[in-house]
Image 1 (tube, rainbow, N blue to C red):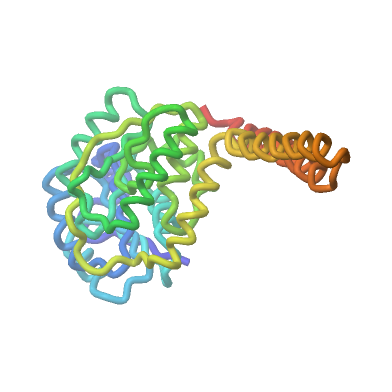
Image 2 (cartoon, helix red, strand yellow):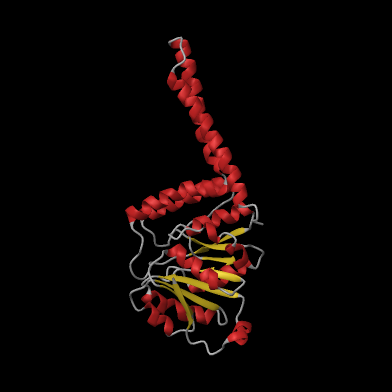
Length: 303
């Protein structure tokens, strides 16, 4: 459940709607009072007529009080539903033709928003802020991000600079086409990026610097580490399942045929293990083929 309200907006109805620009800024926040106090005035100074939406994901600190000090729209979750759920709640109520998503912890700098929008105006459907080498990230997260970037680049056969960045500007109508695919947790950036590539929408990257966050991270190494491992499989399943299944099937098939040749020459018989390896290779290929067809149905209306 959620409650929506506007803070400090003197205009109402059609007058307010007409005065809004086509840009909405959606900021998911859970106990990010200090970060919100830092970024909200900067956004107001840079995007004077933009609609700013803060999604309060069950905060127990003074985040709501901070939002009340600024001309922002608040969407409140009565309990924490997750970062992805907050993104979806903000996108549902956003009125702009373009939505900018950014975190509330000050790692995403409002000064970079005009650069994302400028790139978007060049004809792209989504522009992502790609974190550079100097950005703050622990060793485990940095290595994981590099792995995801390489895997994603291999899948789409294009350079992906930052697959997991949550700082992005996107055309609202295209984003909403894939909202039903988005998870409620932290892996929404991966899902929406691969969905855009799969649908044939243009994606660009703009280098940014992400400084050390304000406050404590809500991510946990063990819990979210397991979730991020699942992202690797999700990348393939969202884009082209057969590209993952085919190498695995060929590995089993080659092993089965090779082992069969060995047993026939050395032992003069065909073993059960040989049959099992060959059959497994065939089954994996067939599963990949079926998954590929299901993926085509998921994206049949995209583009």
